[in-house]
Structures are given as structure tokens and as C-alpha cells.
Length: 248
Image 1: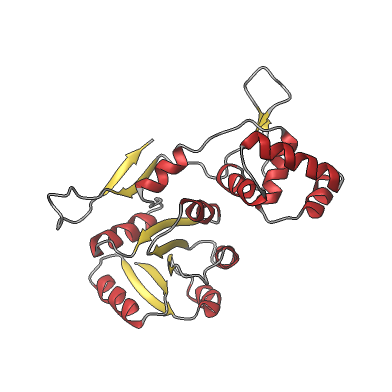
Image 2 (image 1 turned 180 degrees about the vertical axis):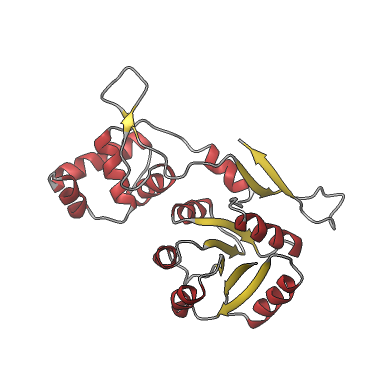
């Protein structure tokens, strides 16, 4: 039996999920935490197999990172009304195993939790398409290090200390990276890093003839398969949306 812990401040939502999982073999709702500030403590006590978190404005990356540290064996699923590609990608980088829209049918919710519990990832096709079509650039070793540190929230002075270079040199690198990657500010550069670079990872030799170039390992490597949602055709509006396994 796999245990599910829900974080949501809506009693009706919690009761509905409890009733659903009562009739779902292999899944059991062990608790509902209505207060986000109590979630880490409750998760540490219960050690759930799946942590289903209702995504609100209070759920920050710091919160997700803290949960990841507190319950490293739990698989986190975000329950959302809507989510941007950038936010989804950053969530993936923090170890989120699935993103599920609250407007989908009960059957889809159960399939999502079941698949995630089995070790799969669950994201909608629109998100996976965006990830797979992301642009890739060849960065030097130093550029990769700088972007990786920036994506972790470090300021120029802190980056300079980490890389043992001057703050002025960091600014020069930033300016060059803005032009090279086609981004306009630090925020977009950090998003690029979250999408494409692994924080603190070592870079490896590129295969091209220019030995000065390096490639940085991507932040998120797509698995062999995804379980994603396919929308039903317009002529069959009442049919449930089946899960589709998309192979890469």
C-alpha cells in the first residue's frame, strides 16, 4: 500500500480525494495538511510515498527544495489549475515528479498517482514538447559555471568569489552571454540555466573541432517515456482523457 499526503487548504478537496482513494487499490490517503508552514513537519513524520501539493502562490521554490530535503524518498506531484512552461521546468529541476491539472477527470488523477508511484514521470504533452524543442548552445566551461551559479540565485559578487575571478570579469561574461544566448537580462539567463544546465555539474568536452568549447550537461534529462494527457476529439466531449505513453 502506497501512502499519499495531500497539502491543500480546501476541506472539500481533501474529503473528495479521501473518498476516491478509498476505492483505489494500492493508494491510501494518510493525511491532509491545510497549512503550508506545517507541511514539512508532517511530511517528516508520515514519510509519504507521494506528496500531492496544491499549487498556490505560497508554494515557492524554497518550499519545494525544503520538502525535497526533508522527504527525499517521497515523490512530489503538483496539483495545478494552470502552470507556465518556465515554472514547470524549474519545478522539475527541484525533483517534482508530476504536474497534474485539477480540471482533469478522476480517472486521470488516479492514473497519475499510480504511474508516479511506479517511478514514472507525469507531465502533459504541451510541456514535454516545449522541453524537447528548447534551443541548445555550446558554452565554454567558464560560461557554463557562471550560468549554473546564476540559476542558483547567486549575485555577481558571490559568483566572483565562487569562481575566483573579479566582479568586473563576471559582468563582462554576463554581457557576452546576453548576446550569445539572445537573452535580455539576468532573469532570462537564469531561466536558460534552469532549463539547460545542471547546477554544480562538471562540463565535458564537446565533439566539435574547437577544443576550447565545452558542453554542459542539461539540467533535466528526458526519461525513456512520459505519461502525458491527450485531449479527446471534439466530437466526443464526454469521453475521459486517456493517458498516452510517448516514447523518445
